Image (cartoon, rainbow, N blue to C red):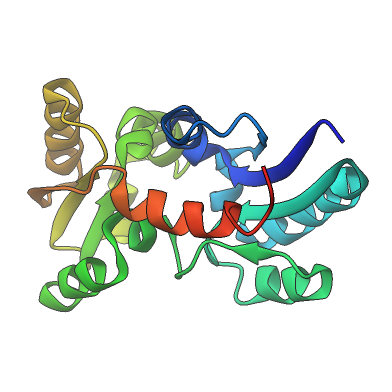
Length: 200
């Protein structure tokens, strides 16, 4: 075995996972990322994770999946139960980035909230504008976002340039803007719990 633990992750977490591997000094942890674009087709997430588990199982002492449910409607959990593999808690990345209590407080205060992370701020044009066809059909904006009231940027880093980009994305969508700094601590806690179940 080349590594003790394999983390199968959403590509949207690649930067954060690499940072946490360096921070925690986890040379025994390998990371394989699936395309972030799968979030636009969540029915494909569980089959893609299954393929990696089956490909990599014999090469590693343990596997941990760095996805939340992410719109799979429980399909990911059924797959992981079948293989005895754990995943990040919660319904989506916004919950484990913010921490469950903080996220639920945000959602309760304003259910009509659209969330961004560092990755999604950087990838907004590709995943939102182009992914939803708003670059070609801007009139669809209100059809997609008419029930939203605000955009909340859950920032992992203190980066004025990303903050400015997030503000611009909120303006493009016609939404009020808020920034909430999460840092890496909530994700680090849940990832450390999953990875530490296996020997280094």
